Length: 327
Image (cartoon, rainbow, N blue to C red; front, side, top):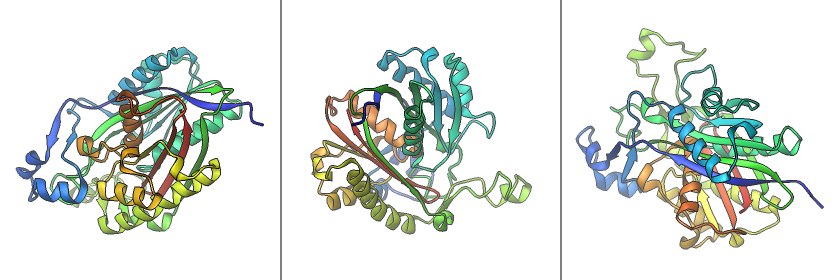
């Protein structure tokens, strides 16, 4: 009988003030509100100001999660920031957050697993605490994707937005995180990538001129992968937790595309009233997507004590991950 569990003690989120609507995009590229809404479910997204960075939103979300949990920054043992848009390659954004929080005894690092980043970070932090590495952890998913989006590419610029979500985890003697499941397939890496800026293609005139510092995506292939893997990852983590997906009280998937979400829910036999969706307000916020939705669901009263939550995501890598949480 297990006597050590990891529970979610508090949640928080933060998004930019600036709203970019589909109507705004109609004036920027050759697209339409009808096209975007029909194919993605997105109506608007939040866009960071030039002076705002990933750390800006990670810090605000973290402060709110700590306040909700009633935990002082000094009590944190670990900070993990999941992101594909760090403030810089080093120091890690987690270290910037640690400094601003004043979390003096916490170690910290960034984790990059595409849009699955938060679920990966959640699993890593859970195992760290279970192994005796500490008692409290802060897990953040934060992005400023608007800074790596090609605003001339109508196929991708309509999809992404900025924001952050965070959770505080703590050791408990009652069930919290029941199971996690992670996977990847590097064979699909070229389907969703940011080609330049690191050791393969260091920044140069050619990389800038060829627009290689922006997101490149094979949309149809990623869509087909996502529909399949969302179901598979959900079923596997449910099996590990010893439940069926029909027992789930709230399904919180990666908010990338409403058609992917609805297809996965239908395959898993999860009714519409048990699905949380906010993709229409924020678009795809990558690593921030699931924790942002989790915090919003909690604050809207969609989550009650004892509820079973299913989190599932997919992303660049290609990666996928899922978690079952008893609230």
